[in-house]
Length: 101
Ligand code: HEC
Image (cartoon, rainbow, N blue to C red; front, side):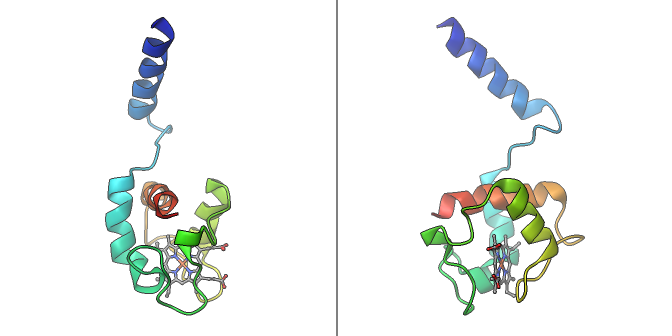
């Protein structure tokens, strides 16, 4: 019982301490719809040829920091979002991407 309480406390702490921002799936969903769905499809099934199929985990079997730099810098036909989306926004989009597969 005690350890459950301690873990709950840590979770709450992680939620309020800045810098431990865990991406918000809900904000990420809206950002994805606005910035990514045109090529990647509303549910991660690609619309643009050559874009990865997120439902099949294509392009997502990468750790968060790698996804972060791909989304910031872009990759070939994929535009970069540095200066377009804030650091926190990109983390939210990544949290949402992880729900698609
Ligand atoms: C103009 C079309 C377009 C838009 C808009 C777009 N992408 Fe992409 N994205 C692509 C294409 C094409 C690729 C494949 C790039 C390659 O490997 O050549 C890609 C690849 C990716 C990858 C895989 C990277 C890798 O290394 O395999 C991720 C993750 C990704 N996009 C996320 C996003 C997110 C998040 C957004 C919105 C913030 C977004 N994309 C917006 C076209 C787009």
